[in-house]
Image (tube, rainbow, N blue to C red; front, side, top):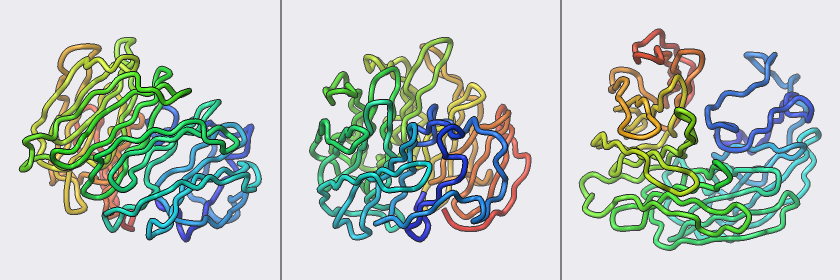
Length: 348
């Protein structure tokens, strides 16, 4: 999301005692579903507890732990980038941490602060691209830098977009580069930043096929086994053990389009869309297993009204796709058959 008019809007539901801790992109389990009840379907300024102007812009989402709200912002021209912390109940700014940044090529709709932080009881974790490298940083809840890692050779078509996640006590990063540059999924020790495992993604020999991905991995549990699911255009899907990086399964759907929206998980399925030119063109739902190749539940195409950048959402047996041009599609989560479409408006 881009913070509208450089304004952060905190709702009454974020006041400690009422709020669910929101620890990463799309919430604690990556589903995008919160546990709070009683929220209005439409909000006005009367529902805001407070608002503050932000010193920059960003597509990243805020994360919440206890009484503290953490977020990233950047100057539109890439001249500065920072992590900020606010008191959740009042909007009081508690601290900011400035990060060195090298300007680099971005898509016109991207920002230099598009990756959402991850947070736990001890630390805030940030990942982003800077010039020709990928960076990961851990801060404590008071804004003190605890560790920093860098990996060279990051070169992307449109900038950086993937967010870090925590799974089974491991910090997981996903970075995808253009042809012949290093792409990987990596597990780090959250306390030290030390590499625990690395799975390299294929980009060699993919000049006609490989398009950099911007999605965020998702942690799921299948038959009692926790796994990380990652997706890349050239290398396809993989299910990884978060502790060791062991490849539990893989699936190559031979995709010719880019993966931008992140993987949705629900109804026993993982689902992702692929597209270009501001619209989704292909999609697939897989039913993963604890080991062995997943089953294809259904496939969708351009005529099904697919999203491209926005991430889909599973909820109560339905699959919701918010198209980039503001049209909402509701599908049966078991079959992918359309139930209804509604124009909401706007561009995303």
